[in-house]
Length: 462
Image (cartoon, one colour):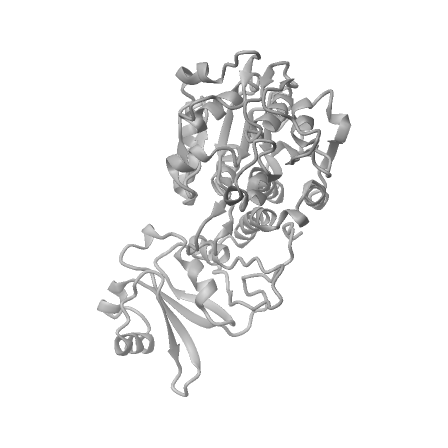
């Protein structure tokens, strides 16, 4: 069974067989020492080709047809592990294979696949790209499932809210569950009031009802893994309304949900021996006469009362109920992902998502997985000295501490209050967006940390 796809697209890999054109992936040393195909070498020297990282030189045949390509890796290929993603956007359409490359087969194939992503759903013209023959020594099935998970996350984030509101996100969630024969449960609208009061509070002003999505897959008795993702399909900021410039990217505020769905896809497609549970609270933070207000106080599922000091700090509210619900099952590992704070972006920028955990062994494992997969992560502290900042005057805790200092940490400390039974928990404050083109991404909606997490989970259940 092929991996699930939210948006059907042509495969970046050659599945037909037949003749393919060669790509010589080379460093400057290959040119200097002449250790490549002599025809390619002769053409490179005539063209003054230096094999700089990401550079492409097409090679003609003697009769003037396209005969192949030289692709530069620079002097240190390990600095740009997915540089082959540029091939997917610079090669002419056609079928290609890698002839020589000082990179692993898995790395060069995954890089090409990641770079092949195009979000052209709303484009009148759709241009065909090149395809690559996966080397025989590469794990083609695993590469394809990782790409499917990444592309699912990117597709969900890139889709504008008029086509990706709460109803549509639920439909995509149901589609994923159906593809892998997972069980699903949905609680929505006023049915949330009693058991998920904060989810209802945040989403009640929207024309699309708030809801909590739950998926179960796997076998009881296997390692219990729960994924929780923030699903704010659009965030106006509520009554504490955002300025227009800050609203431009708010379709991506369901990036946590998109990423845990992509991670769940990888886990289910690989048939990992886990007892998997996925929980996504889904809302649109809108403005209406019944919108929640600054100064309101609400009781959470866990029983803690929360004082609303800013309606634009809504993500932690819906996550609070979802985490409390997930925690009641006492999973062995719980991961939550959310586009939660601007403070995380100020601290680490858009490409390096922080994670928070009190589990030192898990932190070490995740760091190693990050390095092994070149999926960047950075641990930030759950510093208990800032616990005082989330205390509220009239309730147990506030959703928006005053002062604006250490905002990513105080948000994580807020969430920690709702996790008490879980063996091991980590919170990921992701951006879910690539502001500019990179070799392995054209920019736009982005999967962050899920390849590293998949690698860690896969290793832990072998």
